[in-house]
Image: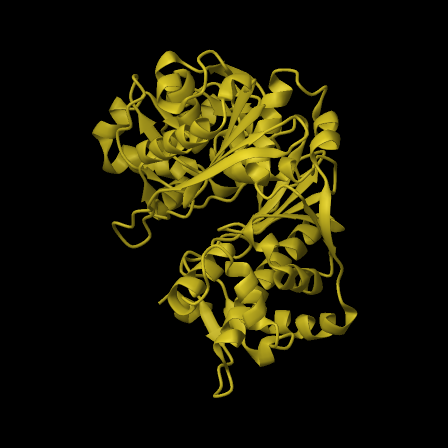
Amino acid sequence: MLLGIDIGTSACKVALFDYEGKILAERSQSYPVYYPKPGWAQQNPDEWYKAVCDALLYISSKIDLKDVKAVGVGGQSWSCIPVDQNGRVLYNTPIWFDVRAKQECEMLKKAVGENKIFDLCKNPVEPSYTTPKALWFKRNLPDIYKNTRYFLQSNSFIVYKLTGKFSQDRSQGYGHFFYDMDKGCYNDDMAEIMGLDINKFPKIFDCSDIVGHITKNASTETGIPEGIPVAAGGLDAACATLGAGVIENGQTQEQGGQAGGMSICMDQPIADRKLIVGNHVVPGKWLLQGGTVAGGASMEWFSREFGRCFGEDEIFKKIDKTVSDVPCGSDGLIFLPYLNGERSPIWDTNAKGVYYGITFSTTKAHFARSVMEGVAYSLRHNLETAYNAGAECDTLYAVGGSCNSDIWMQIKADVTKKNIEIPDSYNAAALGVAILAGVGVGKYEDFDDAVRKTINIKKRFSPDDRNVKIYDEGYEKYLRIYENLKGVMSE
């Protein structure tokens, strides 16, 4: 068996797989996000680990883990966890949509130069990345910075708790503005120019590398046998991309989780200032990504506040039933899913969520369907930006919770004009890190072998020509609404 652990934004997911990718057991355990100030969003990494332990102990009470051969860990992006030399967390980590470090970004642009930074790391200078957060610690909490042995990522923190070894996987390197995307290593001179101590950032590992083994203490806390190998793992979106079977140039993963977006697999790093580029968890491959703040989270928000009749267990079935009679285009109602600002391609921390086109005939069902359509428009916006940068894709391999809604999948196919295929593994990120662990200990010959053995397509959706024109018009209006309102949003 192979064990995959995924540190998501709202919960950790733990899943046990056989070598063919079949889930033998799984468990999800939630934890909170804290919002102490406007623009801040942080989590307690120790609460992540407790959730992981609780989930694993539950699974180990149902199935014996003695046949687990390796463990992989994936996690959310752009963490900045300050830990001391004993691995003790010194402060809650700002998470991926925390934007407290705006001033640090402006300081970097003036001191170093935005173009110089982009040429090296191939990513925009935005406050949600790891580097400005580390600089924020240095400027605002100097004692924390001084006592920090390492700044860790979400997955590398869990790897440390399991093995006692510090690490930084290559796919999370893109969070550092001093990371050389072409060479796949830190640039010490750039870190020094930025005012950061390069020794506070751990050694970089390939994502399938075995970092260490389950310690005696971790075995007691989790139920995993002592001595089991643990792989470095990687970025959750990159792991989900592998878990969707996307490992070849041009293949594209569409992510319908709490955030949302797409990841296009490339043989070389194509960069665009409006998008995100990083190493794939597969060696020699890169991912051009479009990441939105509130994809599935928009529907979660709507369901929580306005759809309490939707039961949590069958939320998508009930939403599909609710919106089934609403026509394509929601009778002109358009939703902008900018519920906490927006990442690519607009990179506007001041962006706000909007419903446009409300009339007396607008029903709750219209509001629900327009959320689905607005998220699909944001996906198309990223895909078109990637196309203009030189990255093309045909079929989208979809993963995440939204795959449980046939209507939402058809909307995405119609809006993007792309064929969509859904692999049969619901938890693609956990499967992806399990595959990394399997490759790391030689249970698969290579990544091609792993994908052949584990990935199967269960559903397919194709664009409906009758709906494409309606969505073309809706998409153009979606873009204009933001352009006309962004000045108001920034006030």
